[in-house]
Length: 183
Image (tube, rainbow, N blue to C red; front, side, top):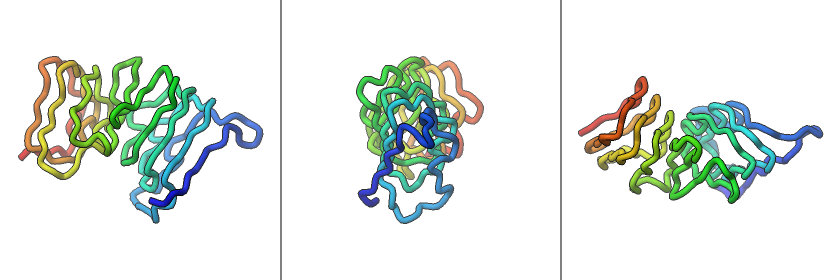
């Protein structure tokens, strides 16, 4: 993509920007010209709505502020960019491309930079968490020990050489594995 950046202001029309609504940056199912490379969200932002970055195909990176306290599962469905979290955010970390809610031990998103790395041993894999982690290649999918729940559509639309589930796994939510093929 290009080197353009959108910096969302802290106020609009004199009012504080406290959230990002569903589909705010969506280009739906179309990858445009790659004109937006990065979005920086302002300090003071408190929440992302479900689907906030759904189908945001032209965004290569998102920077989340330290003030952000709510990211619902699925906020990054059909998004394939990188995510960074400001230092000092007490609720979320982004390490090795994995966005994790530290309060609930939930993997919210696995960025393309995490492909090929061992998945984190968190308590829960949230809805669509592995959407951007998979590729149409034949690597094994190994869910590590410690994972207790795989949320709805947690593993979505890819082909794996094999799938290994941990003994710690207690719950597979409805359609935990959607359109997943094993050779």
